[in-house]
Length: 103
Image (cartoon, rainbow, N blue to C red; front, side, top):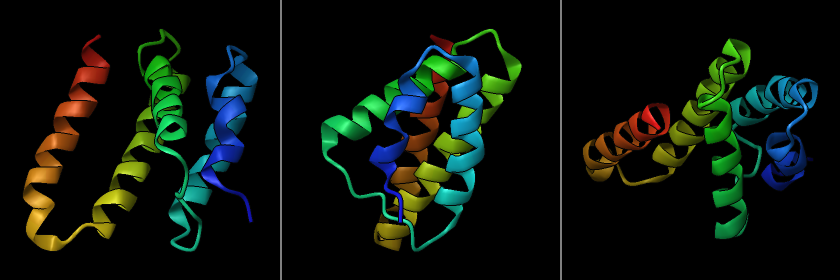
């Protein structure tokens, strides 16, 4: 089974075709609750930075695809956190997504 790290090259590349391919593979990967999000902090940071570059791009497909992928990652992380913390985490996630789109 693939891991989140396997998508790193496609997410961080400047090649639009590879980014769109990464989106089409990442959405089903992140939708599968059995897929692993385990990775090192720096790897997750790089992945999020790559997705943030998509969000800031002028290409609508890339921007929309990145928003969907970030949303899926966020939802997977929130599901793993204790329910008592969800309100604070959701607000934090909204702030992060907002900051990505404003830059």
